[in-house]
Amino acid sequence: MNKKWFLVLVLALAVPVVALCGCAGGTTTVGAVNLNSQQTGIWVSGEGKVSVTPDIALLRLGIEAQRATVAEAQTEANGAMDEVMTALLGSGVAEKDIQTQYFSIRQVTRWDDIKQEEVVIGYRVANTVNAKIRDIEAVGAIIDAAALAGGDLTRIDSISFSIDDPTAYYGELRTKAIADAKAKAEQLAGLAGVRLGKPTFVSEGIQVPSSGYPRYDYGGAVPAPSIETTSISAGEMEIILNVQVAYAIAN
Image (tube, rainbow, N blue to C red; front, side, top):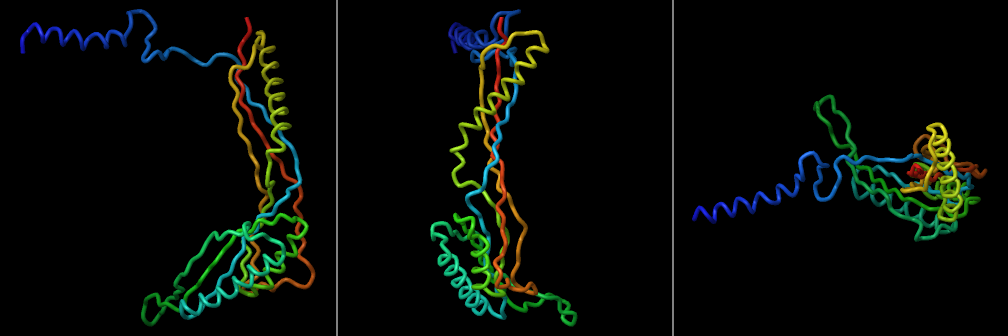
């Protein structure tokens, strides 16, 4: 390559490097981002909280059958699950609110002391669904109906309560959270001897926790429910909205 052209190429490559580095003694920038910048102002978090009565129950239940062959176990499980589904639909649970969550077919084994190995003694079929119950007052009766329909094969894993549409509470929650954040920021500004400016950044996060209850098992040695309806209480729950706000410091 001609030496003249080689020198031009070297200079051309050097120009972007100089542009990135900037002048000596100045602020170093890359892509117009100030590497020496830092957060300024007063950063606080605020919380808004409301107690509400749940309007839906989330019931996790299913069937578990064990027999000598897969076909026998599956036939028994399918029959029992059909009865449970009929009971749920007959109790007012909408078909769209029932969703299969788990299905399995597994070997059941035991240790054989003579053979000194695990031997297959049968097969277990499990089928579990989640049911959303919109009539809170009917939860106990629905549990009883499903347990009666599935008999000794019934497995009720858990029940929890929640709010189907929490958005109706967001306005009140945001008002409370922002007020909480502003009160904290004003106190901090007073303690620091500065004047609080306008918000420069706001973000939020919402928590709609569901109240959960432990597993109920109507199969095996646990007796089936009596004629008396199972008592279920929804109680109250809290919806929480958190905000993070950055306030400028006024001059």
